[in-house]
Every structure is written in structure tokens, then in C-alpha cells.
Image (cartoon, rainbow, N blue to C red; front, side):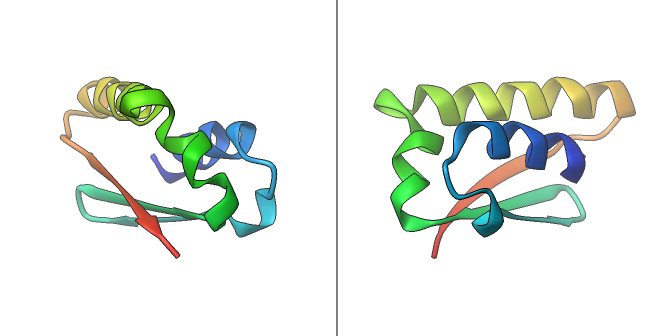
Length: 73
């Protein structure tokens, strides 16, 4: 699951080196550079919601429920 989230996030941000994804059980924690935070969240949280939807669908395929936390560095 971490690889999927890392790929999605990396395609959205400018500073790909600052992307950190940690999978802890059923929680996926994402941290990006401060300048890229708006790109991940999107207008009114639409991008973040879309990322969570994709992760939820991929998790359902595995039979697990994942949650995505976006952490500001």
C-alpha cells in the first residue's frame, strides 16, 4: 500500500525527495515539504479525499481498511 501512496503523492508534488510514506498497521502516514502541502490537500480537500478513496478501494481489494493521515513537517 505504501508504494501506491508514494507513487500518487510523488506525481503531485514538486519536491519528490521530501515525500515520506509510513505504513503502520492500517494507517498510512504521509509527509511532504511545506510548500507542497497545498497540492496534496487541494481545493476544499478534494485531492486528499480522492487519495483516501483510492487507498480505501485498494485496501478493500486486500481485505483491509486503511486510513491516510497527512502530516505537516
